Length: 117
Picture 1 (tube, rainbow, N blue to C red):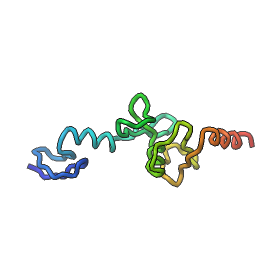
Picture 2 (spheres, helix red, strand yellow; picture 1 turned 180 degrees about the vertical axis):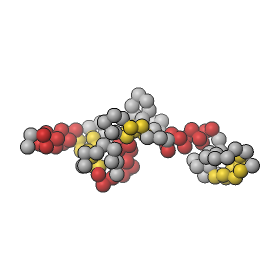
Picture 3 (cartoon, one colour; picture 1 turned 120 degrees about the vertical axis):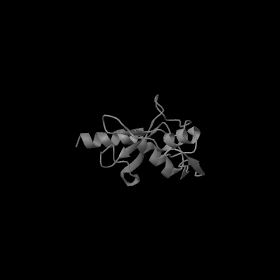
Picture 4 (cartoon, one colour; picture 1 turned 90 degrees about the horizontal axis):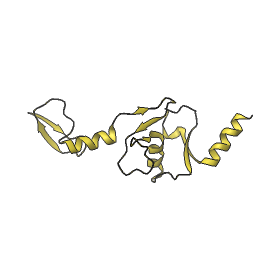
């Protein structure tokens, strides 16, 4: 038997298999939901699997990683009128210093000014 600490609930457990991450299927499902793989869309946007009740999830249950980062920073969900702008225009570069929350109107105005210089 191998001794482990569950990556989700942090409880110690023993299992006969090597490389076990979680103590049960329930914890494993929750751990994968919060720490699962990134899904990268063709334009470079990164999606993640948040908790089940997230209001901005798409039909596959995924949310943009940039939105999750800014929501965590703000301590609230983004409204439908808010978008996250990447300062360096690299959609995969989701660090808090590179992200700005704008209204849809501000975001459109910003890009129109840039486009018609």
